[in-house]
Image 1 (cartoon, rainbow, N blue to C red):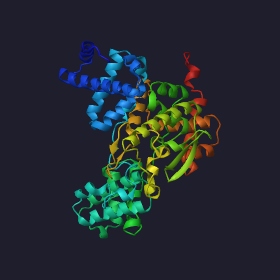
Image 2 (image 1 turned 180 degrees about the vertical axis):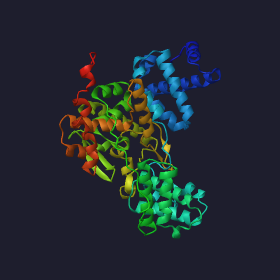
Image 3 (image 1 turned 135 degrees about the horizontal axis):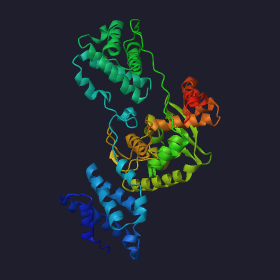
Image 4 (image 1 turned 90 degrees about the vertical axis):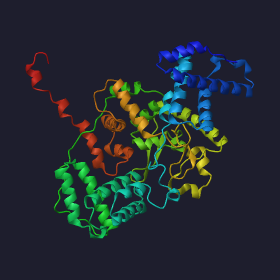
Length: 466
């Protein structure tokens, strides 16, 4: 029987500024864990190992999965539980392995996906009759014809199999356009109304050229596909689009950035740099997408609804295999508790009813907590939320004292740029990035023509300190 030194634990709680009215809850979490650990040992006849030193990472993983399954903890309760375990294992008992344990995964990967997230809204059989994103948005439209028009826009986008983020963007801009002309019936909207609104954005709102372009594309789709009268805005001219070079990190800066990360997020960031994947592409990877035999990763249903192959970095192969093993154990635990289903795209769950429970379809980077699908109510384990990786990368850049503006997309920029620096053909880089047009990839050729580097400044010729 493990009997902790509670007096020392209380001192640790005080040292970490834990309010005294919360001490009871912290000790309760520890008692729950110790009871679980000892029950687990008894069930496996491991009585001789019934001590603090015999606690391992697998026991923490098993406990966190089990308690969340049985008690349905709120987000703040789950964070409190994790904090209590960290203080108990690291501060009180000073277990070295606990310092290396991936606490970040359990804490940041527990964020639930919203109801309009791209991976939980494309199965039409699970959607309500009204468009998913317009249930609330149409309430702000006082004109009934506008609400109907907005719904027609959504279904037209879905019929064309447009990406969910495109659907959300177009719907938002069309809604703003309709609010700009609240008294005009939908059937009476014409080119002049669109031109007036676009000029309003450019002149009065002074929005960026990219924003003007998105608004124009949204209205063009509305007029052509829904109102069935192609848009002609001769009275409007797009502002010149600024040509901005991508932010690229040097290999030294990449090492510094990744050196500030560990565990799951180190692997995610490393894969983005090592493969050039977009943020959502790496987040949505499934177990079956890792092809160790051919040393490649399959990216499915990427931008433009296209599949492509990228190289599997050898330096991350062992960590990926460990991640697959972790997902396998987690999946078996979920199946044992009558869960284990995952979201399947394009109504595959109707074609293959059992596929949702197969290991190969499980997300490679699953959320740490089971949750209800916000659309269907089905209890599933989704992938981690993309904002958790974005926050970790920004924090790592700060910790590494990088002065450049670093985001997850910076790793993709760096991947492309470093390949060109190594002498790879631009067509190869285009294929790896998944660009439809090579002109998009050409932005990275600035590395092949560096006037700011190859030309020596005349100041250095007259400055003795140069």
